[in-house]
Image 1 (cartoon, rainbow, N blue to C red):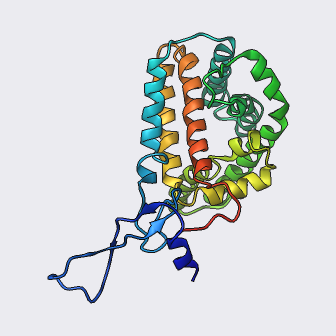
Image 2 (image 1 turned 45 degrees about the vertical axis):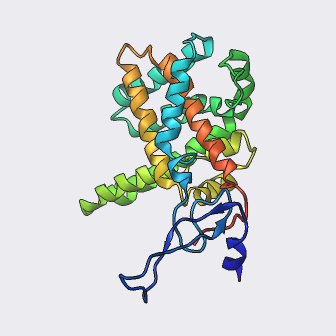
Length: 279
């Protein structure tokens, strides 16, 4: 009954093929043609994907659109852009060079510096008038404690992975395959917590609820989160080459691209409690 009810809600018609075990080669394939919700990602009747994962929820498309928008606007130096560039370079230098072999010190650097880099996710990037003004940035510092807890949660997760998969602090030998397991779970976790900064800063949702919502919301777009983070990482790695100066421009566009993907997820009601799941 629930499935039949969902078929008649919405304005789009599914063009998927319904598999019929009794169908012979002489018969034409049956088109689903079910009416589905405009924000559906999969048809609830036949399970065929809609165009959402190729358009609004496509990491590649959102990234490409963000780059096109970036190219069409004039490049501007801002105090906040320079500040974020400096914080990023200091963090990378300390983490990968100075404290690389000092596990606890390394984690402390991440714990106290990375939250500063997450504050711009609270900006209203949807507005064309949004600028990385230092006034906006300073007003966002009130969320530093929430972001600090978010980073702490991540560090605890990675610490547990290190202990379980490498025997860290346990003085026990572990199966080498666990190192691969650790790598996979570490990457997977980034896709799981992908939307947490947006939920904390713009939806004003507590951390524990934001984590749950982010996990549930990404059930259908997890791979897109992963790909988008890869695209953003490559963009900023390229920007580091000219003495890191490129980060002044690529960091703002990175925030804007990710924020756009958050808003697309919100438009598809992925953050809505009790949203209908597709079968």
